Length: 296
Image (cartoon, rainbow, N blue to C red; front, side):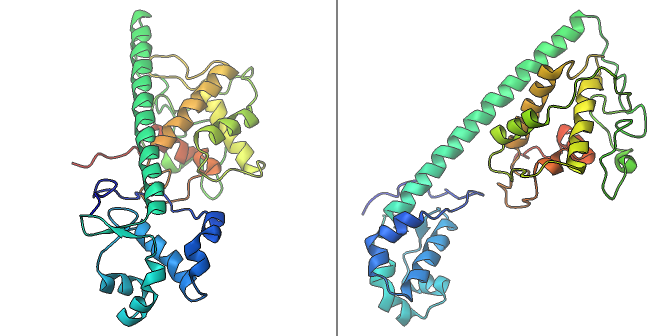
């Protein structure tokens, strides 16, 4: 018997199974299957994707039949078609070359994502070290000026729908998300450029087709905060359009690391740009409330 093609602990972990309809339609198995068997083939692949290891099936006919909702006799009658192309490895489980290909691709994507996250975290650590070093050399004490100095996170900007900006007034807001006055010479919010950064980092999330009304107001308010809020050391997060866009570039990259916000942990799938730029959600992301939690 062959060795299993990947570790026995491999799981989909939020990666969705996507059907290649053209490939399926052109396969010999699909051509040989009758109208009753074709839905069972699709169901069998869905079941295999959710197994551990991902993309495999148990080697017992009775279990496969039960998963498909068939009697054992019904399954045994259809087995030559349903299990066509599947072969048993020495771990006792069944593997199919097409599903194996998809799982190995998923593993590669996960590995690249892990490496990207590690590189991003290292870049963020280095940037923080440089920033702290600059603040020390400039004689800035980092006494938290501008931090939670008013009940609301911003003045002159409202992006609430059914709530007001005072709903999180008692929460610890990071790095000067306290009250401040918008400067009259602050550059205009570059909506399209920010939308492009969102699409670059978060292509898997819903992309806005319409950007107007309350969404525009919310993003303007967040942009104004980035250009006017002060860090604990007294410096600003951004001073012009270029540095403001750099902030949002890092912000969306940070969001991409969160398994919860990206829906990879299967707990929630409501994140989108309109949600991210609401005041309370924006603050929670900056506070690190959606960072991945290490499992002990």
